[in-house]
Image (tube, rainbow, N blue to C red; front, side, top):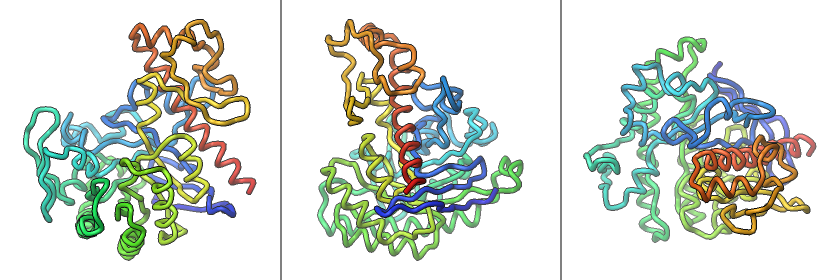
Length: 376
């Protein structure tokens, strides 16, 4: 299947329901993508992720991290073993990020030039270099359905001048990423089994917390005529209202016939809000990270989202589920008391059950939004 995106319904507030057609399957949008950093959604087995119905999560598409897979076990090894889908036994769609955000997060361990970024591995201190071309080459060898251009994330807060300079670098790198991809995208042998389909590469809008720079970045990237566009550099410490404003301002200048992806957000109520604004794709490590720290998401009797700290003593004798309205395998079987016991005792099963519930909560939230948009 070749890449395509179709919008089926549009709502008055900007939200839309659509379908993203990728080599490994069709993704109903708006969609939340669980993050599988090192080709693994932490503490959750692939069968649980893909299973639809009782005992499963029904994840349509997941994300893997270019930086981490490049360092360990290595993109060339993964390529020799048939690509990331075969390596991790996941035959549904996948997206790989460019590694730009992870390199940005290294702070004092990196040096940025117009050619790319020199950095030291967080694992062993070894020195590496990522250029736009190298990032795309790694992603081609990994073989996910969607790759991302290499970009630079600016720190928060940052001056207008610093953000403008960084944005210019991102645009130059986006063009180099696209050019390299176009010249090398046919070299993925395992895509031959998918009717010769190839990967697609998305652009990333930057511009910090400045609306004029977000507009300029979006317009520059749209000129490159990429199949999809992400909004990056958000949820890095700015107030939530600023995040929302930057998303809203950027959406105005992105094509309405192409998928729009906000990277690295957010809490369940945030992803619901952004989906209703017209965002088609979102990802975040929060469901599994929060679960590993004992933070669970639920809805109260009025349907409002609440956060439960399962470590608290008040749950020691609570025989109820995390969320009585939740249809996940965890809420169907286990009590808050048991989940608290697992966490306090340091039992790994607790981390898995917490993560499964939180992922279900996120995925169910998007499923509900899609139903609402279908009725709009």
